[in-house]
Amino acid sequence: MDYVFPPAPQASAAVEGSAARFPVRRIFCVGRNYAAHVREMGKDPDRDPPFFFTKHAGALVEHGATVPYPPETEDLHHEAELVVAIGTGGRDIAEADALSHVWGYAVGNDLTRRDLQAVAKKQGRPWDWAKDFDASAVVGPVHPVASVGHPDKGFIRLMVNGETRQDGDLAEMIWTVPEVISILSQSMKLEPGDLIMTGTPAGVGALVPGDTCEIEIEGLGRVEFAIGPRG
Ligand code: MN
Image 1 (cartoon, rainbow, N blue to C red):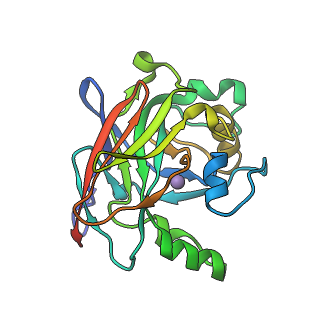
Image 2: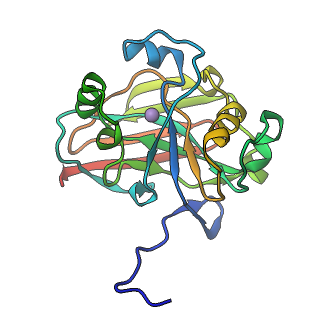
């Protein structure tokens, strides 16, 4: 195939314990999936169907990265999240089959320009500019299901400069991983390489240039990144 200029490199994530990489196709994110975080964002937790937004695969950054402080914001927020890595695609996936589509799990951070999100909510605009900016998707090494199984409980924590900001448990998710996969696959055909960020527990807050942010999920290790100067 001839291209008029070289195509972008394939986005990918590291794989724990392997030199091979996990090719990333799309990044789906679940909104409001932990009750205490729903409350801190000023809403009442409910069992309304989950809603989704996306980040492009090129927004992915890895453990050890320095994320430039993004433009157009004065309120960059951290959101610690469990990331589900899809290995087998499908549509209308049954909840009972959903976990068989998962290749692995990773620690992630759904970086958010909270001030732009507030404006978008108020004006009825899309969330894209608040959520899908350069280097907005921190994703650590993917741990294969063969090694870690399917974590459905255990701590999920985030520290900024060593101080704990988020301290939740995967068991607090309003919509479980099988439910999220099943519901998402009713709207979109899932494909191998899709990642799903599954929502954040309470305690979201601001990051500023010079901060070091660590996220840890029980059984999935620890991911660290820094916030650099305004990009
Ligand atoms: Mn999020």
